[in-house]
Image (cartoon, rainbow, N blue to C red; front, side, top):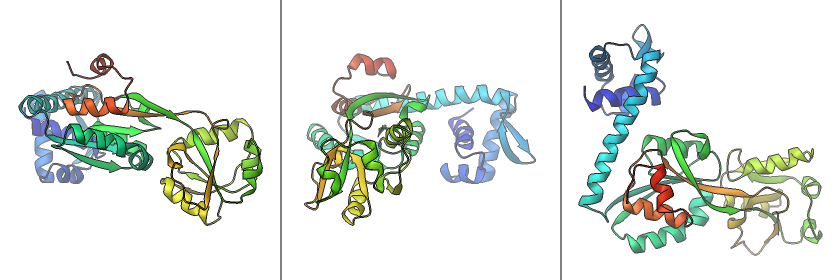
Length: 307
């Protein structure tokens, strides 16, 4: 039994049983992947995968049990490497962060600046994507830390912590009729075309839920992942923007902001790591900079790390 056999099984699951993709991920050949899997099955005396001819189609019942053990073994192997790196070079390495555009653009700059002052020899790799991709990257080890408002709590293999709370804000061009209303209602908003985030991004669920509960139809004419893009199209007069409150601190002169804290539920941005992962000290420092109320004890109980 060897780690290459275990990785072949794990990657087969991650790549939906496509051995060509598995071979690419492991920098080997497809026959090599098949051989690694077969040798492990022969050693264990069970079939891990269901097959249709030579093609893998699913996991057998024994395979489902074995997969949990394989995941733990590979995670502990990675933890062992991180532990060695921690004690051999405490202040050097790479911190890989996966986050949505809103977090990367408006929240992380200050945090990263403080982190770099403390750990000048640690490289930072920022990756931007949708919440579900962020979760997948953290689960696979491609990212050490994931940051998003939505989606991170749905994955059993992740443990996440609240960072901070925020509201949505309304963005309109200068002179827009909504600026003359003292306290905007959902009905007032629904009278105009709306521009906001894609489904699953930056608290979009709370926006939809508010209109649904009030039984008010809305007309979302354009969606985007990027707050800056939303503001650009609002500037063109295509609609009223609904964006994250942290995105309106430096609006261009032709746009104005209106509070929407009374219209939509509070949003909570969370930071997530893989459950059971060994966290290097600089990773812990970064997480606590994002979530200052998080104690070392709480973090230690969630992951394999000890003071």
